[in-house]
Image 1 (tube, helix red, strand yellow):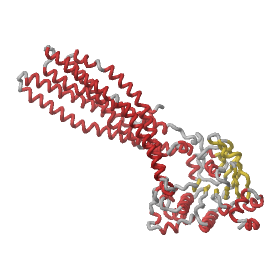
Image 2 (tube, one colour; image 1 turned 90 degrees about the horizontal axis):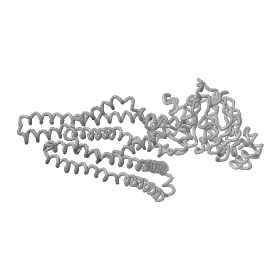
Image 3 (cartoon, helix red, strand yellow; image 1 turned 120 degrees about the vertical axis):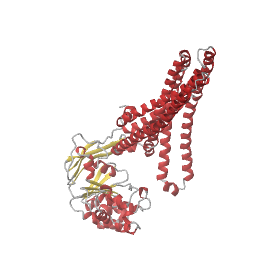
Length: 580
């Protein structure tokens, strides 16, 4: 499907109203013909002919046409604006729904600011075209055609002389459209870059201030701003140089009318009233020519915006449901990795990973930064697909399970905590928005978040700032943990969830996790030995492979990476006892 066919698919529902709108524009343009014609008749029959009895009838017709055009001037824009808003509403819905369906890889490859500009600036360009430009162009074409027809009724040779300008107009239009299209693509790219820069700096404002880099960021912003300004000016330089050409064509029509029309009038071929009529139609010929440059500008902006939005919509997610995917009513939480490998951009992240987890077991995962710990869990949730091997949950390959059904039964507290601009209760209940408050509070108690939430003046009704502004790192982690717990998932993944809390809080949370019972399989990614030492099995990842596995005591005896981390965190004396 081409971008324009995709756009037309949103017009189907509004096609009757759009056709009605064009019919009303046709009537409005036809009514515009009346005024010059009446003016010519008044000159010939009333002023020169002395037939004053016809004046009242002619003025009544003129007044009626004017009133009707005024009414249509209200109805037409309102009709097209209503259609435009409806089309944009459905288009925004479709694009946003597609964004929600995209996988992690898509968002890794696309910048947030770029995606935002397509949902705002590009959508607005489409709205402007569908609400105004599209019928204005149609109206201008009708003016030109109707005016020529009426001039033909006055004098054919005069009309033909005016048509001589059309080939030059068509050539200029083609040249402008060809020249301005790449310029608009450059504008949209640079606008996206500017939007991305601003979005990142607003999100990272605290980092900027912490390092006192305001001047540095201002210099970077000015470079992006200059580039955007230069792109706009370059585009303006292209299309504005065509404006005088169209203005010249318009003036040539005026000269042709004055010279050739004047000659015909002096020869008696046409009357003075005919000259008045043709002069009245002259603006209907001139207006499309004068506005042609602006119309081409809007058309190219519209086409560019449709292409950019469609480039997002047309990307198919790599992670999709299998055509024969299964939905399970319940999960036991048995997990098995069989010779799993994962590559991205030619780099091997995980190599030949195999392990088995029984339902209700707790698995600790330890390893240096970049070892692939988070990637391992992302594969389990099927945020990415394995490059080799397979992952099974309850004996089913995750690639054969319905994505939403799979993720509904997995609770995940991610390493990078994200909280929405919502109440604390709303953030915790995000996975189960219809759950009662008691369930929310129970999850908060288990995450040791209930006490500090109650100390806040508005408690659970407190509005959390963007990304959790106003809360400490430990508080955000505990809310994130409560959000995962409130789902009561069969599989619970905690990715460095307690790194920002004190030891006392961590101990309390571990006790609560143990109380979950055998219905929950828990994966804990951590850098602290204290977070995983009581796990049923511990996996040590190094360079994308499992270098060690076993219980806490077994790994201490091995004297490998795990034992080194333990000694570093607890000291040599603790190593002697094998525990703190």
